[in-house]
Image 1 (cartoon, rainbow, N blue to C red):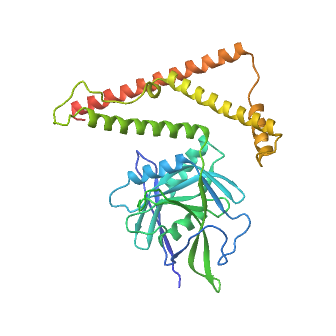
Image 2: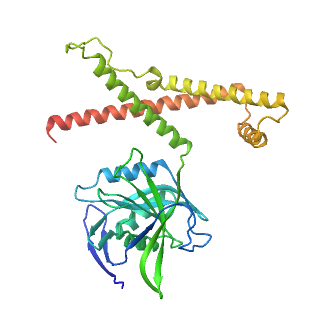
Image 3: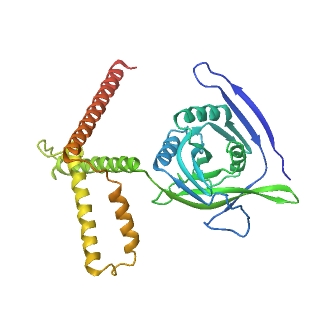
Length: 354
């Protein structure tokens, strides 16, 4: 048997947005079907989601939301934004949604979700609601029984009434961060729904050029901090336990702190890639194009890359290059100035006890 009730409670705060918590109760369990690919147990249309592409910004936002949750909260949920192309869904953004779970009841901030969606659409009208995300709590499963209620809510929020559910396994049972994507179909007997079947679909991580550069810088900063801490622990304290004040305490290179040196390093890497490509082209010409089996495909990719480079005079290129370099230095200076101001503010607050 199935039984569901919905109640709505509204609260208003003059300093915050109006929040309506929609509470839904149901006894339909959530069934989990793991493994990518088609299943004989369900039948889906050709436009049903079968592939999900997640951007790194989305994962960072979900992990940040889970880290900042209240200790009593088991998991967090939120709305996924992106684009849909047939059965392929690209998730480019997300935002948190307040909710509460008590047994078979789930309360969701409906008005909060609506107002946040309106604000996001002012910044990017191309992003639409494609589904919802959730983290996992310790001792819980990837898909809880209450996930059916939340999924039904997001069915009314998406344009095609077919949302995807992305689960980030924050239990960290292994050394890797597992990310799963699911679609849901009702299981009915004599036109009576008895459960919701969550079917796992393929999920992949894809980053744009800007996101890739940002991730590389974050990794360099993390590696530099770890190396500096290790060097400080190894060199500042001597084997006999005495302090060594003149020992080096950092191993961060000049290229990691100087934007000009970083740009030079990037240009050297680009030159190395060009030389590798030139060597490949020379080898194909010498062998008559019979050595590798994918010569034609690689040749088309090289032709596309070369045709995308604009033609300009050396003097014009030099002027554009130096203008971009000055802009980069200005942004770096402003970021350092902002960081210094924040540090001064924190010290003032700490000294004044604010």
